[in-house]
Length: 394
Image 1 (tube, helix red, strand yellow):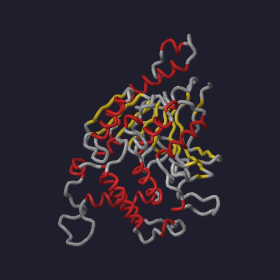
Image 2: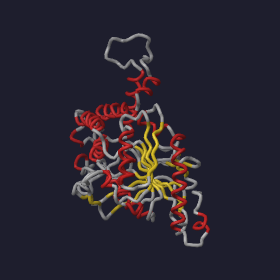
Image 3: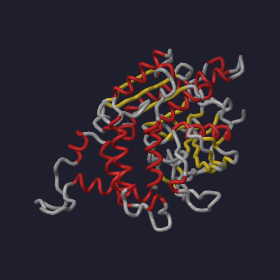
């Protein structure tokens, strides 16, 4: 296969064949926005699919954004030239998920029948629906097999789902700060966030696109979610009980603690770039995700998986705690999968997968190099240089 260079900036494809959803519903027309970085090698053995988390998009690394401006990506410390997922070595793909609000079809997209935004008429989607669409994208790109599918948080859920749903399409999985299913506490926080949005007077049953979205409800949902991404240590070190722009308490219901100001800022910024309906759909998809569904056990669900796994958790992540990662690792071992696991010491809570690039690099870099070397050896004709030496990941 000839080497394929990545295009510059976001790309869009239309899936005119339609998409059948897990719910039994069907979307007749789906648009997918994606970005690629690096070059697909002659054996098509170095493709890495990076899956984004709840509020992410296709712009995973530095490059032109959808407005044509050079911008850092959401996982810029990890993906790029010379980084853990090295775009000088690997062909990196990242797509906005089905149900998203950054170019891929979602509740804010126009219904082809009514020509108006779907709103809550958009069907509920699952993590499995997201990876079905990603597989169609890979077919469009000519990528028959991924060297690795990687992601943190909801992105890790997608990576796990893809490996189980399409075992022949993926050689390895890097599942980071993620879980095989949400625990009750995480579902509870998602529900509180959704309630804030649904209870906003301007929500208008999801049909708010003409007059503007429910800013207050979405901001509160983000504030709640952001608390779960941090840890007690990180909040204490970052904010403590310090007041902002005052030396005494106001004795009024105003923003006065630094942590209050920080959360308000996070809420405002989120409203500027995200869609409230998408927040509802993404959190519900996470709630529904259960890798063991329709199987006797998690190990049974993983019995047909053929990928090698790297599972990373973080010591202070109380949203997706380490015990859940260990449950996944134990089930993978019971299913005779090859799996490496590490709990990384970090004070940053769930956000550590965005804030600890060097810690992750220690594990990701050799893991990817080994997998790609083996994939090149597998794909190269017998007697060729790549087949003989096994490759070095470069």
